[in-house]
Length: 140
Image 1 (cartoon, rainbow, N blue to C red):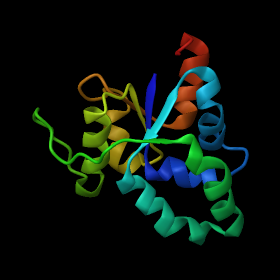
Image 2 (image 1 turned 30 degrees about the horizontal axis):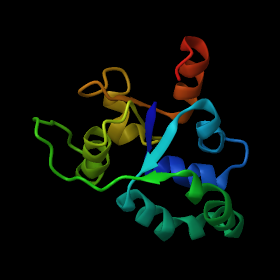
Image 3 (image 1 turned 45 degrees about the vertical axis):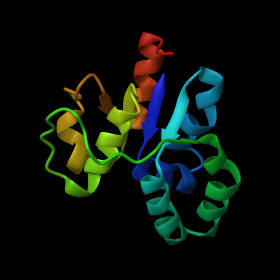
């Protein structure tokens, strides 16, 4: 299963040792999940992780960054896409272009409308939602 992690999830994983974001990223490989992100998201993490604190910076660089596989940023899609959040459009398009199964985000204000319906077969949910669903439905 291919999971695309957006900036909010990566920052949360860096900042909280006990949150769903860190658990998901650290256990992805053992569950058979590919944890993917893009240079666009990584640049945002690098720009903002220091604001969370030195421990978050250290966790990001030492423990978390290496768990990700990078996919190329994509800004155009060969299908129509109605999505108002301009700053998040590259994230959604890149996840679709990389043929991910799930886009993981904590950004309910921009992505919340997609949580129930998804888009072109891409599920959109929080890490906590994904972990609960994977336990209940045996997602692999």
